[in-house]
Amino acid sequence: MSRPKRSHRGRWLRLVIIVGALIGFAYAYRFALRYRERVGLPHRSPVETSPREFGLAFEDVSIPAGDYGLTGWFVPAGPDGPAPRRRRAAAAATPEPRPGIVITHGWESNRGRTFAHVRYLHAAGFHCLVFDVRGHGDSPEETLPMNVPEFAEDTAAAVHWLATRLEVSAVGVLGHSMGGAGAIIAASREPEIGAVVSLSAPADLVRMTRKTFDMAEMNVPKPVAAPLAFITAAVLLAPRRHSLADASAVLAAAKYRGPLLLIHGEQDHGVPVAHVRLIQEAAREARGPEDPAVEVLILPEFGHRWLYEDAGCRRTTAAFFAAALGGPVAPEEAGERAAACIVERPADPVYGFGALASGSVPANRTTAAN
Image (tube, rainbow, N blue to C red; front, side, top):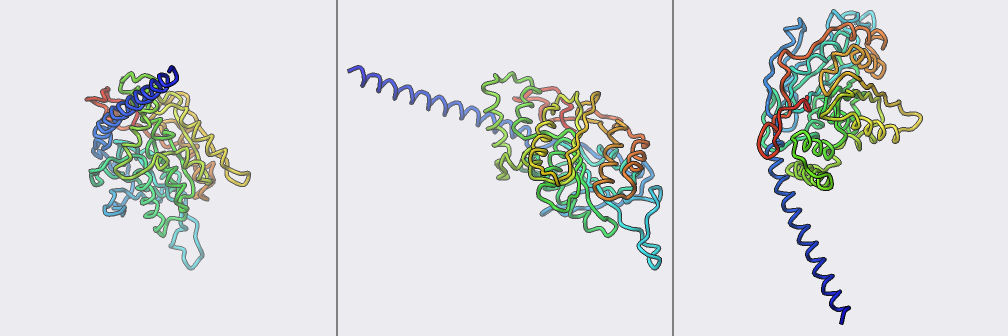
């Protein structure tokens, strides 16, 4: 008689476990939907600067990206850069094409707030294209949630636009934070991207979502935080039918075999330095002896932003692009030109992950975003 009782109890125990799991999933899904409402769309930051402030010639451009256009500035390498080589005597008035760099900002930022990268790369002789990702700056607003996959798609669109310019010989990409992850993902798909510099990039969306729980001081128990972050990240991507793999810089780094420079601040509390180590490891493990080495620069005194204020960061970035893209000058000279260009953060640098400002995912404004 005891065996049937144990069997009966076992069925009840399994039922209780299943019901508990369903209830837990329902609560997690409800939380994820509410999180998506608050975090899915960026708070727009107005563009408050212009290349004119720095005496640089530029073009206002619209970059085709699906059914809309992304607002950008194309800053051609000017006469203050290195003297261009000539194709032949008969075409003495036509400068030799030079490499161009696409610059992708991060979450809730815009092209003006990353213009410092244009200044030192222009000083090193590169053409530069800086633009507003959809839902940011002066680009069209978005109605569906967006994340790293959209940063990757818009980066690819900017690369396609720049690659069509006759004065551009090769294209590199520099991205910060979500833009850095988007740059790696775009490069894993687009052969037109000849080199990538990624600054302060998150390794993947699950880890980034998990970190926002801490930033918002939610005090989610550790056994619950990991699965909750997984469900929340998946729900965040669901409206555009993206997978978690589509938002992973780690997986993309394992696919991309071109020149890659990863830069991170050791004091980064929004995207901890462990993220860059994961990206680095994935990229290095996937490469063979014939592939270029993965370069990493850790800045001990810096956090998530303003890495370009470090002369070593500017020098390393410009020299890396010059070596990977073939000019326009020797890597050493490009690096010194960039290092000598003094750049500073915007006058009003207080902005960040505005979606965490209040509500069910409460927090003070944070420097975790670009």
